[in-house]
Length: 103
Image (cartoon, rainbow, N blue to C red; front, side, top):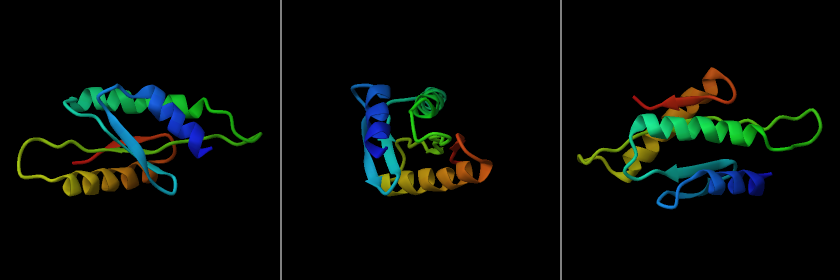
């Protein structure tokens, strides 16, 4: 199933985006030079594409996504990933197939 999810991510992102599996069932996607509203739209489309994957009978594939943005201040990639991780847990607390944006 992870390969199928990876294939959906690959098909859903742009050529300029960077994506990969972090471990377990977690993936990361970097969307360079992307406004937050566009990233949110991409995330929602990705959730829908993952939901269309075929799984075992009576099983549904879901995705929870955390979004964080990085401007050109002193923030680092570590801050970005930490913010995205906190947003991910917020999305999971909302229920399945949710996107949450870091504050």
